[in-house]
Image: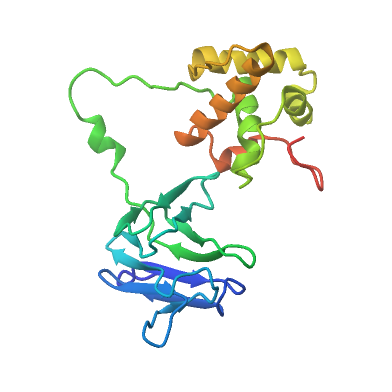
Length: 256
């Protein structure tokens, strides 16, 4: 998009409206909802569960804000590239800032799949690393020191894989599933379930230092895997590009 355009809003076909793509610049806004003769909206989302005036998307320089005009219903703003990451915007919340470059506003319906509106914001800006490296004082320690060439990192990527592939409700893979998944890697052909359990324990105790309050024997390892995935995805320690480290999936394969 050009310098004079901040936000691109896209309503895909089948989302309660005809396919629409429009652009808004800084300070501009789009109102969306079911609409009515006395309540015009810019984006018509034709579902009886969508309020006549549901909300507003407002461009603000390098990001955008969402206002929820519903008196009762929360809206979700999902990051389709963020492994289940989302922001919940409460009823009557005005001007909630959205931090994602690519977002999907999701409104619940009663007649079928949720209604969705896609929003594309400009690329985020970042400072030069050299500007911060010149700061004085003691060096800052690395909170999570991970070697991306190590087997334990492959285990961590395999743990996170289902949610990185946008299966945000998928269960975390079990030890046998991780073992089977990684044995197709040239460096892991002799990997055992005991070795995978060791790497999970090493990640939990030494690398990511997660705590698991569930001491039940049957839940201890499950809780540890869940905690590792949650922390790794929240802090971006494992990202979508890391999936390239895993062996290629066979046709129709899931997590295994």
